[in-house]
Image 1 (cartoon, rainbow, N blue to C red):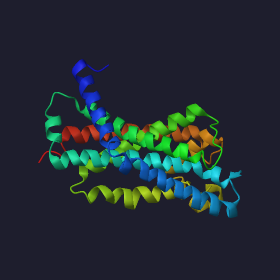
Image 2 (cartoon, rainbow, N blue to C red; image 1 turned 30 degrees about the horizontal axis):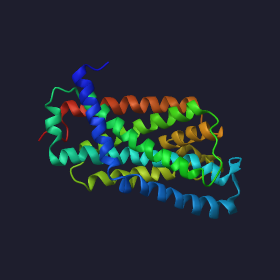
Image 3 (cartoon, one colour; image 1 turned 90 degrees about the horizontal axis):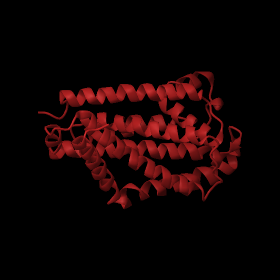
Length: 257
């Protein structure tokens, strides 16, 4: 367990991170809900009626898990990258680093803050989805586990982006040119079984593909991937990214001039 001063520092960082996005909830929590509602109306109702079934389910049911996961990924990532870079830009991070608080406490505090926003938006999207389709969870523990682990992965990824970013433009490059394409090619709107063998192989190289399908398995009981393999991938990503973040903090990369 944390020593008393470490626990206080940890709680303070989390409270600060949660207040940061909750006090501007009209900018951080409402827009994702509106965007996902548009996805439900356009892709679920209008396009879905023409598609019919996908993977043995009505198209609306099929895309709900992917849209929830997409919102969690984007918001977990964006919260950490914007928050940590703001600290760098204002040079307040230097005060935190010279304080008697270990790097792992600082990192974990930011990660939990990113998870809080991602899961909050995920909950809002889930409630919104209930107005469009009946939503029942087949495997609750798998559903909870995969969404928690995914939010950790992308909070860590957002932290690394913030460490290397030199301007506010830099924190939008990865989400725009890497994260968004991986999400859309990660099986959110389609089953990989519809793809030719070559593109099924390419999809298998996309880590988000495993996250989306494992979450879909937890809700619908159907998946295009091996669930155990997906959890192994998530565990490896968390271990590698967390170790990398600690190493970058220790070196002061992108922080100390």
